[in-house]
Image (cartoon, rainbow, N blue to C red; front, side, top):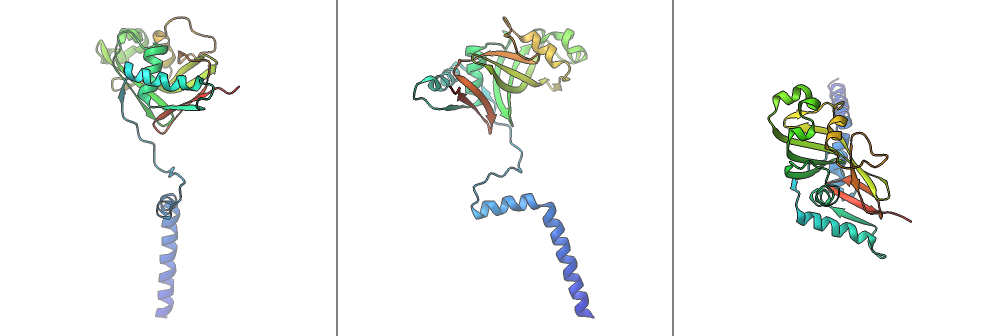
Length: 223
């Protein structure tokens, strides 16, 4: 009889261990891969926010050099830039779409999004006319953070499509984002640029831009 109880107890223990193992299978697989030398990446962990990088003329020059290397007849197929290098090149040297009042500009990467933030005079993003009640909780200046993706629309034309905006501690409702972005745009807007995007001038030899793992990869256009 006691042997039967012992067998039942072992069976219950095995079932409990099996249930625990099932609900933790992803974590256990990652541990196994790490100790077994499996090179596959562990995709269970969330991608961290990369460090904020101040934009600068020096980083713009480095970004420009890396991108211009793609135009060489025997140049690389792609160039990899940090958030600071890519943003400095795009927003300081080329497109210059940020408001003139922008100070303390920096950028970072989170998952597949480029984040750009700056201390801006809120009149340059529409003030109360665009922000509504949010404006009453802010001063005349605050940190505006844009998060979005970079798209190449056609040779020479791209856009920074803004998916999220924060002003100070407040997230801006998605319905307001296109209106806010329109107040920031400068010059003639190329055909095909999205309502919620800042236009970007790009070299015609750039075919694609991808964001991942804290880096921005710029690909040369294929013939």
